[in-house]
Image (cartoon, rainbow, N blue to C red; front, side, top):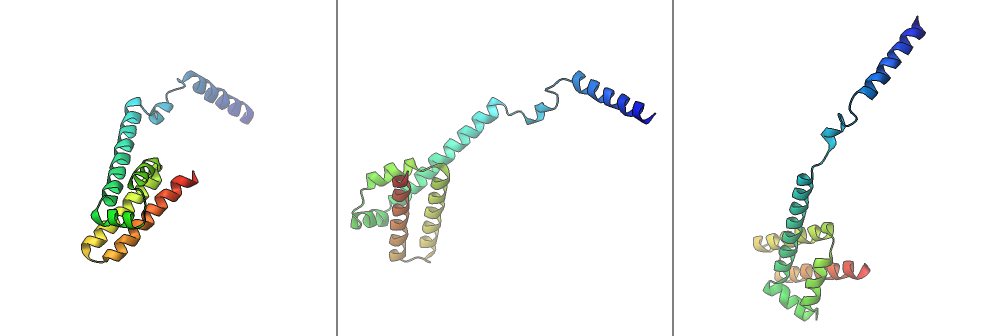
Length: 131
């Protein structure tokens, strides 16, 4: 009796598996092309904003002076910024925001800001050169 019950249950399970549409359970995991496009647009906008943020930070008078004193070509830095990947770019933008906020709050001196700028520029150029 037990073998017959197990066989019957197995046959019913297999019949139900093959009778149901294959995509019935997959619909909840499907990503539409509209969702993909929206994510791509969002990622692109975030990247562009991060590029703009880093470039604006490096366009400040203090940054321009630091670049000039270090004999670094600003155009080379600008080109290097666009070559960073999204994660690196987000990190650089975050550091630029923090430095600007700290400087505005008075917790950084001009000298500290120049060191941060030069460190940021060096890091950008090293990352790009290593690739």
